Length: 118
Image (cartoon, helix red, strand yellow):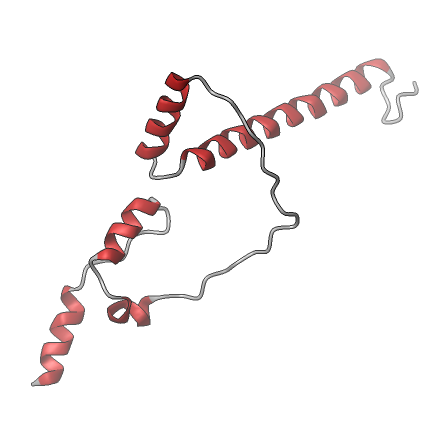
């Protein structure tokens, strides 16, 4: 009889949040659920060590921009500093890619060869 009850409980448990779920959704789920009920469904986390420690930088925003940043970050379920770091990282990658592409184009247009010689 106990086994029948146990299998019914397993069948009716809520589905865990998806890996792409926001931090807020995950937190809300675990506030109302016990890890013990999901222990067999969990997988070990894959952690990576950062190569260098981060440096603190101070940025000054006008109050309206900061309100907007916080609102956008809240909608995405993240901290506004993480949002700004992500945006800056994306822009840096785009700028670096554009610079590399420009060098490639100008190098091939001038000399025609890899070393810039004709």
